[in-house]
Length: 176
Image 1 (cartoon, rainbow, N blue to C red):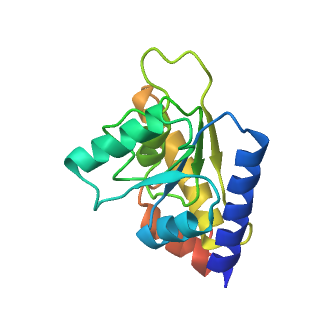
Image 2: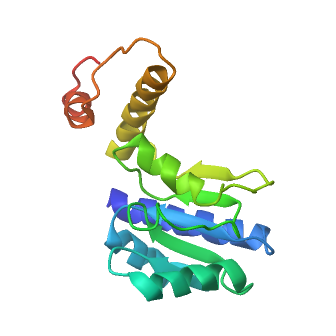
């Protein structure tokens, strides 16, 4: 039931954003193929979908369509399949309809729109439903990103990096 409510809220948010920003494009990332398929069926804008089943020339053609066709305002992408190796600078807005387990996946997804030569700000939005497991996952991924940033900046490492164990502990109500 929570998944259906979240999907409905995501569709409403995306359709409203597209209506309020008629001259802009939007990149939407999700983790599960079923989520992408459900979004594609329910969203009103012309879109392209890139998931793990889209490879090679077809992938290049879909990216080109999104980049150059003013009528194609929406790219729905699997966070792993569309989150690397492509340029989506026609959009300056990225939405994550589902969370990934690794902060690097989010950063890679964001970076599809923010490439060398980009002069506009890229806005990233995370659609996280209150009171869900995903809300807990979001907190864990944020903590993990802080640890990773600390390591990359040469700072101390505090806390466990095992997201799965942290999520289980949160679900059991154990202290973090």
